[in-house]
Image (tube, rainbow, N blue to C red; front, side):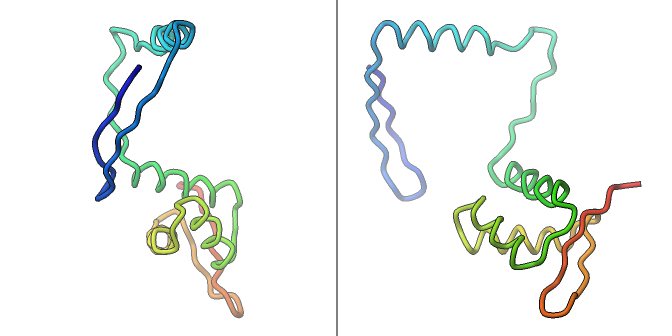
Length: 115
């Protein structure tokens, strides 16, 4: 049994996981497989905002071009929040690799590869 206690924001968390011997063996094998090489440089931890920013850029890069409403809808789905989606949209608007053109009713966001 594994018990995890803490909080996420203002919400208390008290989680109990029950694992049998097979589950522990599988978890141990996964940890052994994921163990980094001793010579590998330590990876810089990525916080959630940085991870979402990277995903948002990749989303637009792969699409090539998206309308503002379509991009916002995808960003809201990614973040789970309208406010967080709008923050990413504003951040993309000011990104050097993004060109925003007012096209009729909605702006068009285009990815521009760095030179």
